[in-house]
Image (cartoon, rainbow, N blue to C red; front, side, top):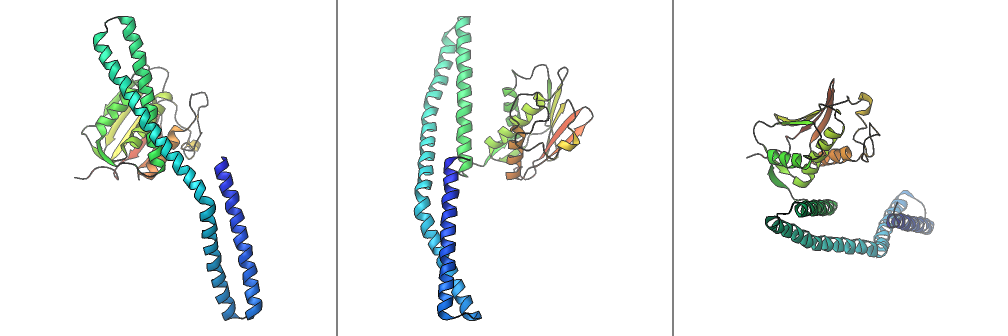
Length: 286
């Protein structure tokens, strides 16, 4: 627990206890003056409760306002810093593209390629941070996008790490979705990463298909144990602890799906596992 949260809980508890004790004392004092009967007791109790609520609001506002102001200032600083970071990253990308056209030396081109990869990683970190901030303040943009295009974009990210795993895509016709495109893309990335990570060491297969309203990710590999189906989406859970990672990918997938009314389920099979997303609630209706 960070110090701000701890201080908030301690201060809030002190204020509540103080208001409660004062209200009880006031209730006892007024009851002793006006006498104890059903009518006076009810009137005094309601009056004291209203007084206690108003007192709590006045005290909490003066105490917690600096804390909330501090968070607002921090949020503003982070957003401004992110905006400033975008400028040098864009400059690096633009200049590497220009240099690529003029340089013919193979060693220099390899160095330039490493700079491009590092720049792209920085850009991903920037986009991820920007998305997390928007998510925290509930300012997520809902846009219309192509499922086919988004799947292809995600597949390109794993071109260098998929080893000899064969990835098959069968989307038949393109589908337009209306949702948080950044969050949905991260969901697809996590499912693809999971499908590649827990695949067979040799002759592995990943199949991405779309049937009716369901997006299906199938991967060959060890069948998920039935007893783990209820906890696989929990944070830090890893069925195979030998694999790299922190066990956060599937919990992020579940969080996004729940928030965007996407029903997700897992179907273990004899030769692998299926992750099924029902997209009926985010399919664009035109």
